[in-house]
Image (cartoon, rainbow, N blue to C red; front, side, top):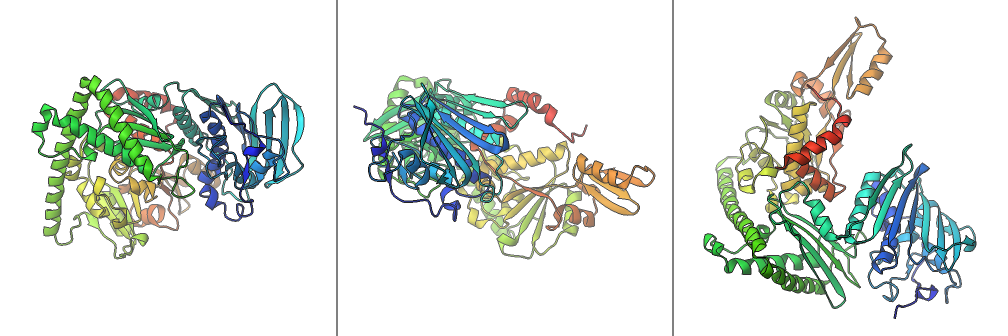
Length: 635
C-alpha cells in the first residue's frame, strides 16, 4: 500500500538564515553555474516525483527578464497544516532549509535532492518567488520576497489538474549574472530525460522574438543515451548491452557499447545526479567489467597472443557506457554531490554486473569476439606505450635539462605565476621570444601540422616529434600517468593565427589536451590568445581591432578620408614585430585571452568526435548546419 503524501510527511530540521550570507555553500558559486543550479534544484523536485511514478511531464520556461517557470504534473506539494509547525506544508518546504518529504523514505524511496535544501535555497536567493499548487481540485498559491512569505497560503481558483508550478527571479545582488544559457540548461534536461525513460522534459526560451523549444522523451532510457553518445562513431556491435537488477533496495542499470575509437566515455549517475568524480558504484562497475572480460579471454584463442592479463584501461578503450544507480541513502562527498561514498554499493554493483554481463555474453559470442579483439589490441598498444615512455624517460635523463630545445623557458619557478605560450610557426615564435616578459612567460614554437590524436593510439602520441615538446614542457605526463600537481605553468596559452590554419592548430591542440590532459581544461589552465585582426593607422596614431565591429567603430571615429587612414589585415602572427605582439597579445594588462571551459562533458565529447573523428558524414552535416555562423573565414 502506498504511503500518503501529506503534511505529516514533512520534517523540519533548520531555518534559512545562512543561505544569503554564504550562497556558495549551497549552490557552489554565485556565477553562471550557481545560477543554473537554481533551475536544477527546482527541476530535481519534479524529477523525484517522476522517479516515484507520479509525474510524466516537466516544462521549464525562460520568460522575459530572465524569470524562470518550472511546471510538472506530479502530486503537488502538500498544502495542509503541518502537525507540529502550525503552518502550511507548502510554506515549510519553501522557507525552511531542511524541510521535505525525503528524509523518512516513506514518501520518496530515492531522490536526488536528499539534502532537503533545494527549493528553499532557490527561494532565499530570489528577489521574489511564487508557487501554484494544483491539488485536490483547487489551486493553492503563495508568494515570497527574498524567502519571506507575503501572506499565508490561499486558494486562488479551482482545477481539474494536479502538479506544481514554481516561478522565480534570481537576485541580481547575489549573482554575478542573472542571464541563463539555454543550451547549458537544455543539455542537463536532456540528460535527465535519458535517465528517466518515458518522462517528457521540455524547455522553452520565451526571451527570443521567436521562442526556441527543445522536447526530450526517450523510451529507451540509458540505451538511447549510449546510442546518442555513439552517434558519428563506428560501433563494434549494433546491439547495446543492457544490464539491470536490484539488491538490498539498490537498483542498478548499465548500458554498454564499444566503438572503434581509442577513448573511453563513461558517465555515472546516482539518483539522477551526475557523479563526475565517480565513487564506489563506478569502482564496482570497472572491477566487474575487467574481471569478466579477463575470464572470457582465458577461454579464447586470443589469450595466446597476450603475455599478461587485460588491464582496466585495456577493457575500457573504445567503451561507451552509462551507469545509473538508485540508492535509498546515498552518502555524497560535498554538497555538489560529485562522488558517491557508500562502501556497500561497490559490492552490489560489482556482483550484479558480473552476473548479468556473463548471462548476456554467453548468448552473444559474436559480441564477445568483437570486444576481445579490441581489448587485446589495446593491451598490445599499452605495452608498446610503456616501452615508448621508458625510452623517452631514458632520453630525457641523457639530456642536460630534460626540456625541449624549442622551449624558451622563463626564470620564475612558481608554476602559479608562469605562462606557457604555444605559438604556431617559427617566425611568430621568434617575435614572441623577443617580445615576452622573460620573468614569467615561456615560449614553445610549433612547426607544421600536429597529429590528430583522435585517430591514433597513445604509443604513437608519446613518440610523436610534434607532441613530445609539448608533453615535456608541461612536465606532468600524459594519459593515465598525468599528474596535475606537476604542471610547470598554470596558464597554457595557445597562440595561433586568426585564419583557417590557425583554427585547425587550436582544434588539434584542444583535442590533445581534452583526450590526454583533460584536467588542464577542467581546472581552467588552458587559454586561447586573441591576436588583433586589423592594424589601423590614422594621423600617426595606431589602433588595433580584434573584430570587424571594432574596426568599423575605429574608422567611424577617425573619419572617412582614405588618404589619412591605413588598414592592415593581419594574415598571421609573424607579421607583427615583437613590440606589437607584446602590446596586443601578450601583455597581461592589455591582452584579450579566452579561458577554455568544459561545461558539458557529453556535448564536448560529441563535438570532438564530430570534428576530429574518422566518420566524414557527421562532420559534413555539422559544417552545413553551422556554415552561416562562420565569420573571418580566409579564402
